[in-house]
Length: 561
Image (tube, rainbow, N blue to C red; front, side, top):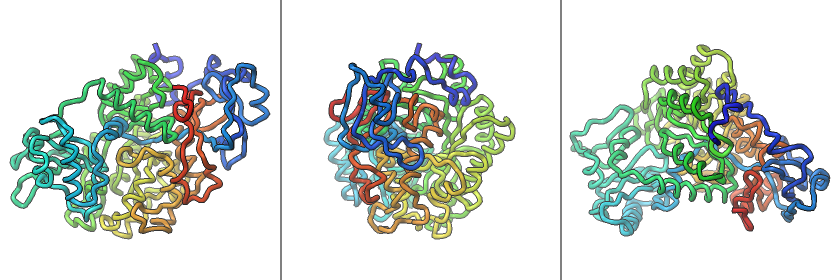
């Protein structure tokens, strides 16, 4: 059975790092199945060394360079002329909420709303297509686009009298509800706040419709769950979307098991076309340990073995945990989602079980405490290849930056957030604290491993937009043509490395993904421009022509699927 591969998965996370290249899948010198010629190939190893051809056999890279490809081509080899196109390792996105993003592909996009009136109009139009009583979800609204005022149920009530509405802020840390949704969820002025969350209220104590962080669970349990078929259909849409952007693998950094179970069902029906590394809640470490003991850690299409915990909230929602109050909310420092003692115990136990752990940390205090928790677990459990991660690593105190390298903690960051939050972050935390904000170059200079992701659907599932954000750091409002915090710009090579080889390392797949060399999985993207040769300002105009995963073309003209 495909999920019981204990012979290559024994020994926890270290076992994942030691997956052997199967001779049944690839053998040196075998005749190529496919040869891609007339290309500009960047293998992912260091600075560009021009190669003009790449050959595939058994779903793996078998030859690099014109001479090697020619030597291994036979009568049965399919030859594809790429017309000089740029070939590179396929992108991995190290941080997605994949199923949520997939659903949003067919739901209203409130990111386009630039005023309360547009917000209400889009919600009202979307409600017209629903049956009475059917929930309207989706969202990705951003209050900063109209001055910062949070949505109110009164905006939605006139246009949704029979439609319950629960639309999320783009960072997934707030929901905006109309009055019908509040009623169905049983939320009123007498409903107490929940630990790790907040019900926003008006001056009279009545809920405005905004729920923050853990308070969102109050309404989520009232929304009818989609069927398994609905989830699988949505995931397929997300896969097609990701492949169109050159993405060959995503890490699904979730706080539940819904995406994990959906991906397992899809894998049972065949190849998933895109590869997945699934994270589940840290609190459920014992359940994951039992799953691995019974079934292993999956295969190269759908793998698991990682755990995620959300420690604080977000900057936009003012729920990220800082040492000092927010500049624009002097009575608020943010708050933890969980008790530190609990997080320490879960981390100690999960680490002792050989599982990979990542902690969501936005504020400077949250990041420091996450680093402390990791240090204590490593000291308690002894040396091993654990690859701890912090998701976001967004606002760092100066002393935290060198600790990532010293403790071998991976900073799993999202470049697009920098050019999004850069429009207004100074209002939240002031100029001094911005010195450690989205500090990609500082982390790299300190010797840390920096992995890149999108946080889709908070940001686009499009690595090229992330590359442009990291290299240029131009905010999306056009106000910073020279770059926001330009001292944190990084090079094209560093950005591409973060989206390929480092992301493979961050997911324990670096011995078979992230580089183009013989024996590695044949996962690569074909672009219409050489990213090392073009003006960086044109990165966003670059198009993905083909995406090959496992030696098969999964996106582009003449795809194999």
